[in-house]
Length: 170
Image 1: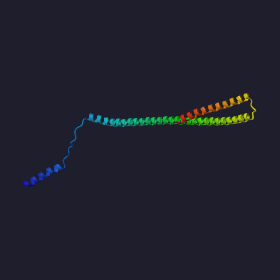
Image 2: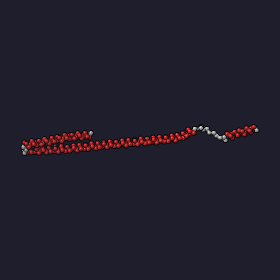
Image 3: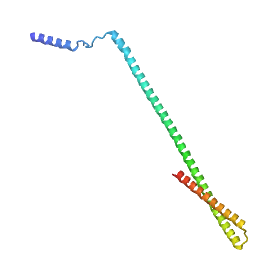
């Protein structure tokens, strides 16, 4: 009987152990601290969101400024390129003008040489016929000398324009 009693006592203890109320092992938290923590938590998240927004806005502003700087630099480069193109075109016009003047003076010199040859042949022809007086001979000689001086001036002008042309090309 003692055995039965022990056995029943043992079962009763086991039964109580299985169906006993469980105790929570949570710490007791002060309600004032809980309230401030619950209030501060959303504020902290709001603050983080605002900081992220501000940072994103700063990045956007920095990107805009960088884009504006790039645009201004592009405009400056375009203006510089246009200036260089205008300068190049101006130089090309100067070269073309100098070439035209050079050709013009070469043509004038050739015409003057042709006129000189005609004057000399005419003078030689008239002199051989004996139609010219000594005064007329001197006048013709003077005209021939003037024509030779014109040719020399044209040659000097041609040399000057060739120097200018070479200077412009280099």
